[in-house]
Structures are given as C-alpha cells and as structure tokens.
Image (cartoon, rainbow, N blue to C red; front, side):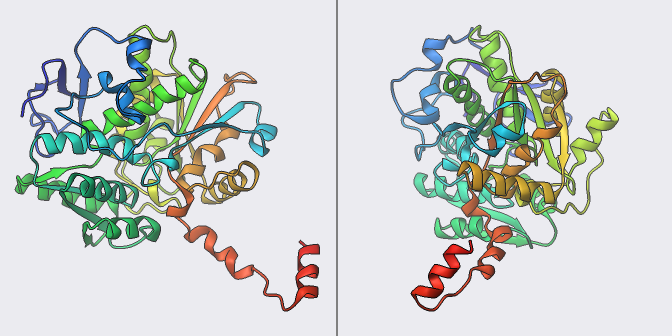
Length: 407
C-alpha cells in the first residue's frame, strides 16, 4: 500500500524519497533512517486541537498519517503535565513541570507511537509484528497487537530486562524470544530477521509511523501550558527516537504558524550508556558505540542508538544540549520525584530530573522547564524493592505505637 499523496517518506541522511516503506525502515540507497513529512500546506490551532472524534492523540488526526476506518487505540495520550510544588521547585531556579507519560495504557510513552504504527501495519495487512526491546516497547507492542487481533513477536536481550515490563508482554500473549547479548544485539538480529522474512513488520522506533504518534506529546505540552511553548524540554535518551519526535512536533507547530518559537531540547543519557553525550562533547559527526552499556536505567541501556543523528540535530537546532548523569544521581532524583511530588517513575524517567542542576546557564531564572517522565515506576521495581527488606515487623499495639513514633 503506497503512502497517501499528502505524505512523503524520505531518508534523513541522503534525502531519497520512496513511495512505500522498505521492510527494515532503512534507506535502500544509503542505509539511513527514514522520516515522514506532511505535504499539505499547514494546520492551524483550531484544526490541530480539534475536540471532535477520538480522545487522546487521535484528536490530532489531521497531523497524523490517514486512517481507513478506526485506529487501533487503547486511549493513549492526554497524559498529565504536573507543576512541581515540592523539592524540585524549591531546589532549582526554574518553574519545573513533569509530563507523566507513565499514565499511558501500558505505562509508557511507547503507546503514542504504537497506536499509529499498528494502525498502519493493519492497513498494510501485515501478518506478524516484531520488535527488539528492553521492556517498554515489548509491553506496548503486545497490548496493541492483542487489540488488533495480530500476532506479536518480542525479541529481548538475554538479561537485565525489568520483570514488570516483560510480564506485560507475557500477559498480552506475545511470543518472546531471548537472544544472547544486549539490546543492540537484539535489534541487529531483529532487523536481520525482517530483511529475510516478508511476513514480519518491524515495530521499533526505526519505524517512522511510531515517531508520528510520539510527536503528539509536544502538542499536549503546548496546550497544557496554556498555549505556550516551554523554554526547555528535558528527556531521557536511549535509542533516541523520542527526543527527535517531540522536536518534530514543536517544529511543526512553529512552521504552521501556531507558535513563534520552539523549546530547547535537552537530552540526558546515563553515564554508563552515553555514546550521544560523548559525541556531543567532542562535536563529532558520528558516535562511538558503547559495546557493553551498563546502567540501572534499563530503558536507556543502549550502546548503539539508531536515531543518534536525529537526536543530535534536535539538540543542536534547538540550541539545547546533551547531558550525562550517574546511576546514583538517577536513584536520588527518582526518590525525590516519589517522596516530594507523588510521581513514581522508572529509573530512566528520573534522568531528566537528575540533570536539572546542569542545564545551560543561559536558561533564565524562572524558565518553564518540562521534564518528560517516560515510564511508570511499577514497570521497573527492582531498584527500590530492596527497601522492603527494611520494613519493621511489630508484635502488638505497643510495639506498633513505638515503631510509628520513631519514624
């Protein structure tokens, strides 16, 4: 099935245009990643933020690839944007907001892209959907495949996948395959399988239809701030598709004349898995992969991010930056979010909060800064579960009173 005439699919690297997506979503000419662009004129505030039709991201259907019939949806999008009233606001010079993407149907931002990509796959009459995953993508793919009545195959690395995420894929009925090695090896094997088996449809963030869904978080942030663009958006960066997706959303609004400016995009990597950060510091035109990435933040434990070029462009073109934080800082930020803001997130989602003290000095005091919390904490409990071992056991009312009084 060819693309709608109002949309173009082209290579990010060489600019080659194609009528339909190749199986691996890599440019047949140069191997680069692909992008979708809307050809038709522009949208305005009224049409972009239409209240008619489906709720959530499909409110913005005119900015999304067209659908024949109803989209495959679980009600994704419309997640809260919460202003910090606790420790975050007191310890930083900014007006801090948290976009709580963990309130999507399967508990992560992946659902925004999955609804669009699976809708496209169904229109193309795809037989089997496949992804490599550290957890969140597998949960999302499995849920939406179940909704669509399609087969899902999940390829995971042999270790270090959060059980809270993997159990979701099992519950939704996906076929799960483990491969030796880390996520990068799992993705390499998945792409190889797709190139050899035409019945498989790739659902990783190489799929540009995923990016179209994920960009809607930018539209929501703008609307939730009272039709105002934030000064900066701070995001965890792993495979690097999401930061480029939100940048795309903000830039579309600017090009369409809805806004005059776009925010600075600040990407944050974990110190043990930071190839994009290293390239940013050196001003390099390429990245040096991290062969054995290691961090408590499993969602961004990726040494060979496929969308690194798009991420660097987003940070550079927006006047943003790339930062790195340690696991210790991530754990501390996660605790602060939970105990002072009432927001429980997976470890990777705390990375933007951990980086707040390192934002560019050119960001003025009082700037509106949005931290994107990409996943729910219930999906990644291992790093906090140890605290349960310290819960006291009391015997009788008097012991209970003593225990409470000493808290």
